[in-house]
Image (cartoon, rainbow, N blue to C red; front, side, top):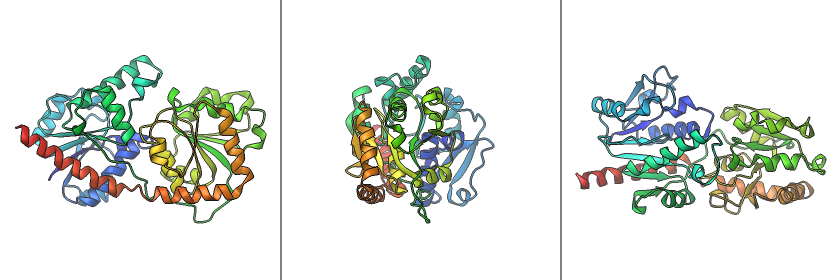
Length: 359
């Protein structure tokens, strides 16, 4: 089987969720299926040298801007006419109409339909259109059972066309080889409304904040204006664009990860933190209970007081924190990119059979 993978996000968004997921999928599929994967990358992208001997072919696309290639169907049809594949996996952006091969598309979450995220109406409209385009896919890869339920409630799709394959944890995310005392609380991600950054701000601005560790905000949320509140002066450090190594170090040095999102299709930071030996305090919302199981402290995303008390309880009882670390490490070990790649391979084969039966 010759699998085409649109790997552009790995280079266009290398330190954001879509890009990190795409890179991990590309690397694991190449290891699992050497000589069977055609990678589509942006023209001039710094493709890792180990990818070349494992790929069936690496194709440089000449329109590297995010989404520019996807206006879209004619460009894909022309490319696939020159470079045939048995199935095309589109892990990000939209699914064009009338592609000449079976398509597997990845679905993350239906947040743009449920929350004002992204906050700009035009971006939210575009995100909704991208989600609706998944109806054109031969099969859809949902990253959690929660994501599958959201998709089926949002887009008219037969349930038998949607398959769940959980994401994995990268090999970079491990406990520190030289453990050090925890230094900070950690928030990882963006500042769109559903990410609930305001809960973390309220936590650090509360009268009891001096009893809490300082906060590190990593990712796009580091630029949020709310972090400039005078009440937080000296209490917040911002890390705008950490790569995986820097992010792993932040997890390793964290007292706990705060993940108060009101919706997540998966919640990759939770697993990454667990794999690094960092306790997780997560919202009882979206896919977070599914992903975290009993290895995280699950809390109401609208109750800052409960989050403050949960942090203080871990501070007061080091044994409880150690138990949470151990449960998290065990939980993270069950989520691997190898398993994801094997499950995706089964989805690819099913998509090709479904397309053949309809032709």
